[in-house]
Length: 219
Image 1 (tube, rainbow, N blue to C red):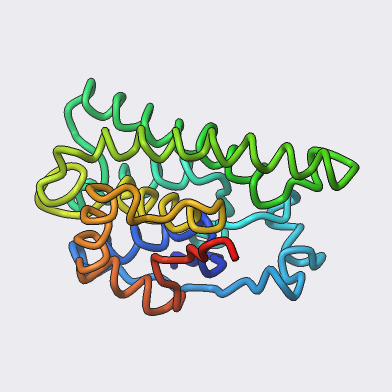
Image 2 (image 1 turned 120 degrees about the vertical axis):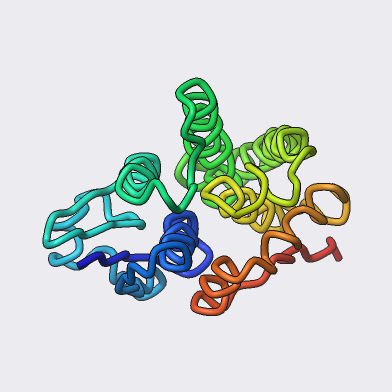
């Protein structure tokens, strides 16, 4: 039995979409477990026993717990190679993992500084400076993803969606919270809109009830 603990709009969308891709390719089902972060469900003793960091995602396979996106993605790809979640050729797979790790350890933490500046500074003035600086660096991250995805035909690795497509969606969606209009990255937006139409990705989106455009122009 495979269970995925996820929160709507969070980075857990990456394995969530991945599991929908697996299900479409293999028929292997999974149990989605909604975690309501705004209610602190990630801080309950039961949840912290699974993940002491209080984060999503958490993958549970036959009672065994796995955390961290890259580890979860690697496991799912190795268990379900027929789903095509990562390239099979060794060098191409290593390059794909390099991109996935960068999304997770560079782009993602940069957004955290935009979204939660109180973790990085004490005064309001300092927090505003942290947020503004991080927003500029986050846009540069999105521009890099846009360059990487420029050859998507129609998806990152070709004919079917993958983890990279799901993370690309998530990062662009978060851009709206950083004051970045997705329309200002037109090829990225067009690519992500194609990704959203893929049936497995659309299934995960419907379950999470999230949309792409979170941007609100400054008053």
